[in-house]
Structure formats: structure tokens, C-alpha cells
Image (cartoon, rainbow, N blue to C red; front, top):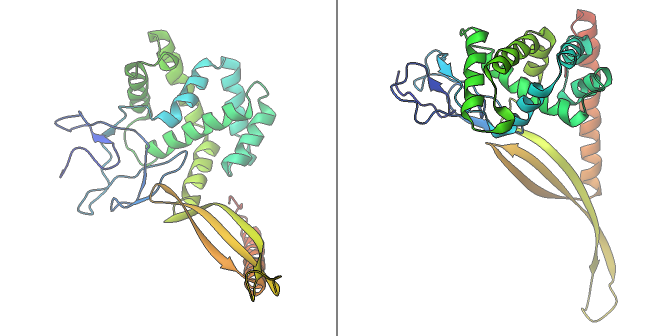
Amino acid sequence: METATHASGRVSRNSPSNANAGHFSEHLLRPNFKKIARFRYTYIRVASRRGGAPESMVAITTIPAPYRQGFAIIKKLTPADIDSLAAALEKPQSTGRIKEVTAAVVKDVPALSRTDVESILRTLYSLCAFISDEETPLAEHLSELTSAMQASGRTELALSENERIDFERRLNKLLSVKTLLISSKVERLRLDYPATLHDATILSDIRPIFDKPDERPVGCAIAHTLEIEYHESGEHKEFYVVLDNEDLQKMKRIIQRAEAKAGSLKALLKTTGLPDLS
């Protein structure tokens, strides 16, 4: 092994030192260690720096900040709530985007708020991504996780011995739900691109045209500014493009064409019997 501590923050179990042990699902990386993006909930994949086979001997040592709330909520749930949550996640409509899954779970588990469900899902999705390609038994991962929770020194994550056993049992039940594993993969693959759109806005304005600055404008020009916000290499970025009416019509045609192609592909999927999980 070339190095014990990887760019992802995951540390090999056979590492001579774990002083720099890091988060268990902090960055979305390709096997060549090129970082693709960083999101509210993110993933990692680890491979040899020389392009060899992925290294799977890694350990959970820290609870990333974005996921502490999710674990804290799972810890406080009643056994009945855990059963209801698992049952809601097992339903076919629970294999989709996180917003759709959240809505389905909230409907079936009224004891949980939308915010709580989303926190739980982001935490479970990240954990699913971490364990998906591992040969390490799930029980071992869960033991490491509860140890990291205890070592965090945070009251909301602290577990007594009995609570630790119960918490591991809860996570084992939730992580054994096949639809959860599928939906987490859908969400991960949906974001596995060099750049992903966050938001878009078009600002329209009128610019007066003057022949002489101290006289009435001779006319006006209508202009539109397209603002694109996106995620790239773990950063939130934006850029602006000026559009005229002809550009707007061109974009409209492009979007309509893309929608038509999407409709055609969905129709094709129906003939194969494969569900559209996008």
C-alpha cells in the first residue's frame, strides 16, 4: 500500500498510524482520486493511487458534521417508529430522489417531521455509499460507528452499552432495506458528474440608449441575464450569460427537444419493464 491515509479521509485498518483518521463519507471521488463535487450529503470511493484495485480495508473513525443530526434522531426514535420507518422505506415508491422518498416516508410516519426524515435519509444514504463496495461485515462497520459516536464527546451521540447494542440493531434493520440501498445509489449516480446544477435565474432589464446624455433616451434595449449556480469540485460556483430574445427562443427549442427525448426514452423504458428511477 502506497499510503495509509487517503485523500478521502478514510484510513486503512492496517495503517501504522490513524492519527489523521477522518470522515467516513466526506467527498465524492473517482478512482483516480479526482474530486468531483461536495454536496450536503456526499460520498467517497477509494482506489490505489497507482490505479490498482479499490482498497476496502477502511475504518469509520469520525462522525461527519452533516450526519450527526440524523444519527441523533435515529437514537431517539421509539422501536415502533423504527419499524414504521423501515416499513415506509420498503415500499416501491421509496426508490427515487430524496425529495420523493422524504414525502413518502412523512406520509407513512407522521411522528417524524419532513426535516427529521431528510436528515435521517441523508445520513443513511451516506452510510449506504460507504458500505456498498465493502467486504467488511456490516456488524463490524456498525461497531466502529458507535465507537466513533461515543468518542465524539457529543451528548446527542453518546451511547450507554445497552443503547449501543440497540442502536446497532436499529441501523442494521434500516440498512437491510433493499429499497433504501437502491434509492441511495440512485441519488449518488444522479450527482456523479463533474458539475451539477443547483439553481438558475433569468434577470430581465431595460437599458436606455442615449444620443446625448442630457437628453431623452432615443430608445431602449431589453436584455436578459441568465445566472447559473452549480457545484463543481466541492465548491458552489456561478456564472452569468447575457441573452437576447433570439437566444431565449433558442434555449426554449433546446429544452423542448430535451423534454421530447426524455419522453421517448421513458416510453422505451416502459417496453422493457424497467422502472424510471430518475
